[in-house]
Amino acid sequence: MAGFEMDVLVVGCGLCGAVIARHMAEPGKKVVIWERRDHIGGNMYDYTDEHGFLVQKYGPHTFHTKKKELYEYMCRYEEWRLYKLNCGAVWDGKYTPTPFNFTTVDTFYPPEQAEKLKKKLSTAFAGRPSATVVEVLEHPDPDIRGYAAFLFQNDYAPYTAKQWGVSPAEIDPSVLKRVPLRFSYEEGYFDDAYEVMPEHSFTRFFENLLEHPNIKVELRVEALERLTVREDRLYLDGAAISIPVVYTGALDELFGGVYGQLPYRSLRFEWKYQEKDCLQPAAVVAYPQEAGYTRITEYKKLPAQNRPGTSYAVEYPLPYEEGQAAEPYYPVLTAESQEQYAQYKTLADKIPNLIPCGRLADFKYYNMDQALERALQICDRL
Image 1 (cartoon, rainbow, N blue to C red):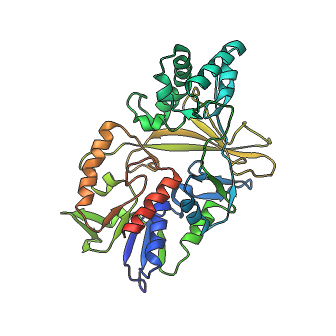
Image 2 (cartoon, helix red, strand yellow):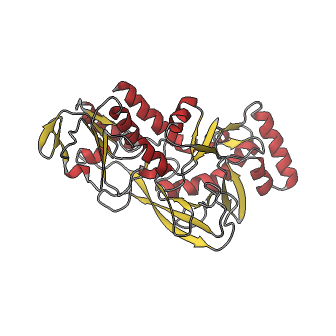
Image 3 (cartoon, rainbow, N blue to C red):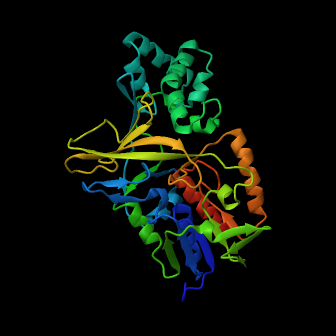
């Protein structure tokens, strides 16, 4: 790193790492980013495939937030277009939008029974656009409770078992609450004030964010081959360091797994192309009853791309094991795993120049806007 004296080290070039790097670079700090992959952008990385479609290597991402300040931050580094994400699910050969709504009731119930159920739902949840499946499962009315149980049995339970590798009873309730039930015919996966996709690409956003003379990005660097912890101190290539180290990787790996490996889920993607104009009704469709895979993302619709044929990815969840080629995508949030993470966080808190941040380092299931907000909180603290 001749000619570039390092004031700050950032491990990981995803959203959290890149945002903090830019913040530190602007007042004059020399920031080095180590990224073990061969590209910037973390799981938001996208590229144009051989068929001319913009696709996302690590699964579907859209930017959505209720907070104007987070949207305005994203606008500093890329232009954005409005994009309302539509999702769905298929079981018993029938398609329904998700979050589940009154179209779901009409699809799976006989007409007379459907009308009765919709009236009951509208009355029981008057003034409310939606509720979590957990709440509806506990409703005293047997018809309402039965509807939630039907959805749970056919979608939530089999999807959760495949996605997380544990039973729904073991998973943190926050995961089951991510997809609510709507009490109307309204469609669209999110209800946020700002729902957008980049005008060019997420990768362009990162290129602009990292375009600063005080930022140096080094790809294909395995940070943990050079960064170690001993006696509450960080060591770089064997020498103790006191500069800030922003660490966005898995915290258990930094500490050598002294309390055991934290559970993460990984994904395998099967990339496919067909010479047809449309594969499925929505960009992202879940298939809870299918063996092995959980969902299919049709990138022709994410964002809408007007060209012949269609490129899509079939998504297979699998366990993550340290040292494998697979990526750790999602922390498996159970009572046991969160207690285990708390032990690692106690170790991290003893190191004054270590700054954990991000979905892996914080062991939290962040959406993109939540990851951005977390990074900006760190920036304020720094």
